Image (tube, rainbow, N blue to C red):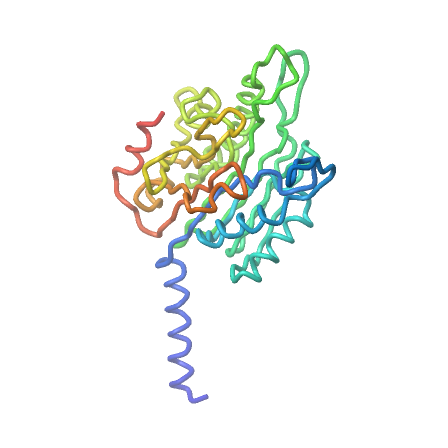
Amino acid sequence: MRQIDRYFLVCALQFLLVATLFGEELRIATYNLNNYLVMDRHVGGYWRPDYPKPANEKVAIRQVIKEASPDILVLQEMGSVDFLEELRSDLGRAGLRYDYAVHMQAADPVRHLAVLSKRPPQHVVKHTDLDFKYFDGRENVKRGMLEMTFDLGNGQTFQLFTVHLKSRFTDNKEDEQSQLRRVREAEACRNRIVERTIDRGLANYMVVGDFNDHPASSTMRRFYSRGDLEIGSRVPAADSRGEVWTYFYKKESRYESVDGIVASPAMMRYIKAGQAQIVDTPSALSGSDHRMVHLDLTSGEQGADAASAASLQK
């Protein structure tokens, strides 16, 4: 290769690198897969013990993921590592390749957190040691919390914290709908997030996942502030019709906003239009009772009003 050709090749590669870091948007999505695992379930009108997620539901889930095509896909209610690899392999055959996969098992032996990513994480921390006082004893945060650090461009990084808080099912009559337990889980996660970010002088972070509670709940307020300390704001999210629900509880025909993203004040300026989108394509509820939520990060600030607008939700 001639020297001048080599020079232009190097310049082209440098240009592509800069474009990747500063020109592309980075899409982050959160998606509860509704038991992508083996369990007792009704399938085709029959009771099936120890049965995997039905094939038609897996197809619908892949359709949702492929249509949104997130760069970083945060998952809840994932089964074993084998199921995560199955999903990654099936997505790859459908043309959506994820080179990086992280699986996390905490106190819950069945339902786990996971992340599929096109971008390499710089750091991964699995917080399985989170616990809290609960009545006369102590309990662990059931699904723990997964922390990953990614490149944001322009010499910046951000931390992504993944959670799946306790559901409303309870076997403790003193804690109706597990409200107290969920708040305590949120506090334990929130305190660790503060330790890992604000206490270390780090300003760019997001909390992503299934919070199992509505945006104005006591649970969610734990992620917005601690006393006078501002922690973050819930990123506004809506579908193409302006509807804001993310979960359909079929048994009671109830729609709720339990999935979403909380962003730090510094992180809000990187969120495109200062808001997230809820997927409402035809297959959105065919594979799961939750709808995917995603947002796009950009290298530039998306308006000084984004953070202040989101803060109105508190």
